[in-house]
Length: 484
Image (tube, rainbow, N blue to C red):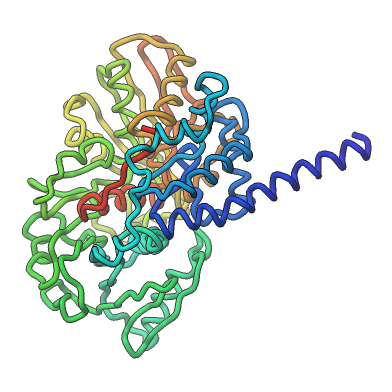
């Protein structure tokens, strides 16, 4: 490549950078002023850097076969900024693509007015002052608890959800609060927290990106009166897994200031196990105790649903290759579970999983059709589900992958299902992915009615995103998504 060509390549890149930079303040204003959450083909663009926006536009090529034009998405954003919109989730990339599919010469402004007519001029500047925030309490502050905190804090600029408190047992160190802050600030897997954290020892609080979070020390729910902290009608998110039945979780409801409970583990007995996007419509406004099921159940159920709808499923086996968890031992030691006492970072450990049975609760059409097992492996995060299925109808690899790609982009499960066609993808590539399951199209195998499907999932971040979606629903915080 000669010097002139090199210079032109760099110039085009700099022009793209300038376009991406000009998007950032518009995205921020839409979010903070109107509570409009913007995305590009399912990937939120709030608080993204210039480089992050460029990569998100580039990612569209993997899905649509061509890169999304920054000029086109910027034009959409600029018009959205003029429309005094009410709160909504708006996919800028999908709107830009849909506009290109309209008859030639259709003005973008007219197209957007037709698409967004329900929310144009519906912004109420006094809404956030008239409506009380929805209080959320995290009972437990482990791996999932801290990721939930990151997501909730990231939404605090526009969403009425407010993380008001975390409940933990008092540690042995005098500087317990400092240590809690450090665990939120630094994460060996997900990286540093993007923001500021201040420790307020006097008030036993953490001030995180301007959000004051009360740290409550308690050994059991019976010790807590949330109203003494100004917390009322709160949704208590139990991340401990200590109680998984109605009797145990009802302890939270006995606390003053608590209204509902969400368990971040599979529930037992009559507790409703919910996979958001599949059976969350069954959760009524009067429901007080709900389970968000498990990370694996959330990862595989949406994919199984779209396969059942399109091809039908006769039977199958689910094998999960799962990263080790805190339940296992660092070195060989006693454990009540079989094999789990052996060193997690040194061994592959065969164990059981209830995910296949749990799928039946969310997707009754598959009752009695699935078996399941699991292998814990020496990686700290991102797991893989291998779905070995016999379908009712024959297919081929292209039809299967085309269907799954389409579902990841345009179905009601587009927030749950992701899709990759990279032959170089490995587990660490999906750290932080907030979709619950990522279909690895290049690894899939099809032989008539028999298929083997590979589905990656960040068993921490992807699951936490599902939990937050369920938190929003239970708190009555719902948004319309565009384009419809």
